[in-house]
Picture 1: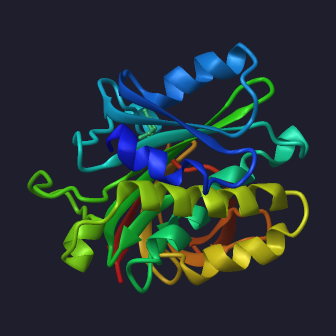
Picture 2: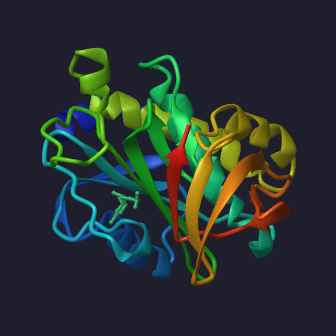
Picture 3: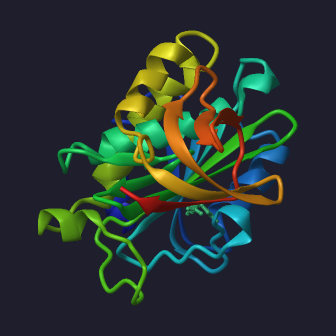
Length: 250
Ligand code: BTN
């Protein structure tokens, strides 16, 4: 993203969101955390052309090819009780999926918040909380190609056959997150409907690792608090956090 491309959306951002563009950072999540700790106001969206130490969930590295992908982090200061902040993970997944649906018919959410198209990952989200803030880090494969062998990944360009404006995608995500992030303590059940409609795991047999256990189960859907409902050995379990989920069969 060139500064010009980013300048084109500045006036269209919903209040209080605003973009800060950086050529190169270690990780947009880490850089934004530093600003948050110093008291930066809610709504700053830090976009980087290049990350030298982009991070994924569970300590994985996140590679975002320069000039092709979109890497950004959004600073929120939720008014809702802290016990509800984990809901922002699904909220961000829904915002990204809906934004992607401006370009392709259906984006799926692989619980809690990977976004996929036809089983291939197109976006990853890393939500991290501080004492009085939440950072929502988002990486989207916009115009990326040449994914490593064996990686089930895709991009908007691969799906549509056209280059897509990264600035426009960023704006679409921020507009939706601005709308949904206020809903975690109000109409969360309604918002969850959007997640359920797009849940890539419902009806699938999976192997999942959680609380240091590896189990196989059948995904029944998403529960009222956003938890994953899994039938394991004939018993319905509610999983709030999992390390890894692998689909075994359709
Ligand atoms: C995942 O799928 O494991 C999550 C990937 C999150 C990547 C984004 S890119 C912008 C932000 N900065 C980071 O270091 N990570 C997130």
